[in-house]
Length: 305
Image (cartoon, rainbow, N blue to C red; front, top):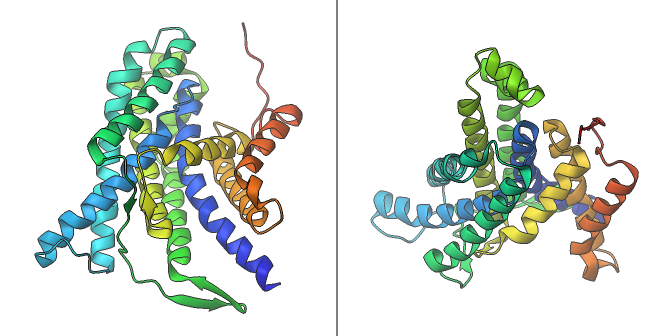
């Protein structure tokens, strides 16, 4: 029982990070029907902005780059990373995707792949190819829960992820902008004719998705310490599988899909199949595409060709 609960908690922790990244995929796809492959690399940039932000704010607060763990530093680093990735998301949409808005969909897809490579190998040039060790922004404690030992970082990851998911849920379903976003997602042309500023809605959608990826990057660094410029490749693919599993374009589905992938991966890692842990997500993807292509919460829509 202890082992089961431990694996479940670990799965929910990493699944929350997958969910934060998957939300960016599903939001952009819901509006533009575009798979933004560069989104996983925004997650990587978010982790590195957290790494450098910790050093910058430590020097400003204490006169030294040696990090002293604490909530004020963690909050500043998180906000700094979110702001940087929000700006990056806006620039990605404004420079790379908006000029191709009326081009064939394959052109945007190729551009997304090219932008992904640009961020990955540009990251190696700017940040260096060697792995970096993320500073401990908060002290780590062992907690007891139903007889199982878990770290305080796991709890923090889950709580912070849930807070930001809740904020997104409120934005999408409880604000005027959320209504505009859903209108653009439903019918781009009609929304434009009704006076909705579609370009602004799309830009802000990219910004919000990139901010969530930044939160995921900081939480990943807090939990797993080691970060590197190519870290977004595998994590991004798993988050994409989570988005497809939940029903790409569906916000609650992305959250559920991320948690499912994380939990399944955690249990697989503690089984004789641990060597194939990374392949489990893609097996799930194949099964979903075979038996329910629209995902758990997605709805089948016929497309004109």
